[in-house]
Amino acid sequence: MPNSKFAFIFSLIFAFALAQMDDHHASHMNHEQHRVNVAVYYESLCPDSRKFFTQQLYPSLQGNLSNFVNLTLVPYGKTKMNFVTNEYEFECHHGPKECEGNKIQACALKLIDGGRKTEGIGFNKVTVGFINCLMDKTERKGNDATFPVKDCAEINHVNNLNIIENCAGHTDGSNYLANLGALTKAVADPLASVPTIVFNQNFKSEDNTLAQTNFVKALCQYIQGTKPSDCNGASNIKISLGFLVVVSFIAKLFN
Image (cartoon, rainbow, N blue to C red):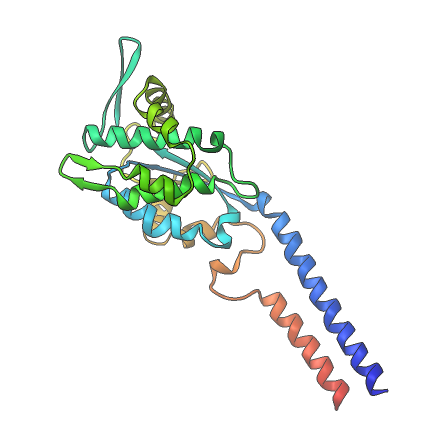
């Protein structure tokens, strides 16, 4: 009898574990329908943009929350644009070097993996890592700046840096940046502040303000259904309660 009792208990625990794995798998498979559209309008040399990207946005996307975001990056900000002699000309908020930085990022967004998202998530991890590195490590002195494109490409395994750099210095880079300008102007012309963060295509000043200091909280309020544990810092309550039920049942068997 004791052996049969242990076998029954083992079977019960195993079945419970399988059920939890199935729930987790189903939850993972359904993340796409719960993704929040997040658009970030920013500038490559803007101090507030760099702070938001490196201290709020990028760290938040390193865990489970990355499964709940469709991310659009728009490095344009308060740039002014004119079309002169068959080519776009730009006047950037923080000087000509920022135009260069914006074009590098515009080309990276277009050319890394052909602009495709990483499988299973709503953005390209290599591109976002590359841009985060630029935002973090670029050295700016007055109106001058040095973009560590080679270091950031190596760190993030970008294998087409030469194509990205050629794009940034070519008409293609100007055209890509102009397209980002059109996206920006559709939100506001000019933007009231940089960066501007928009959730689900609907700008709200309170969301934008909150996201700058607590992006996770701003994002989590838009996630529908069961929210990931990142949103509350707690483990999945359903799993915890289920486990307690099993433990309680086992305890009764031995009494």
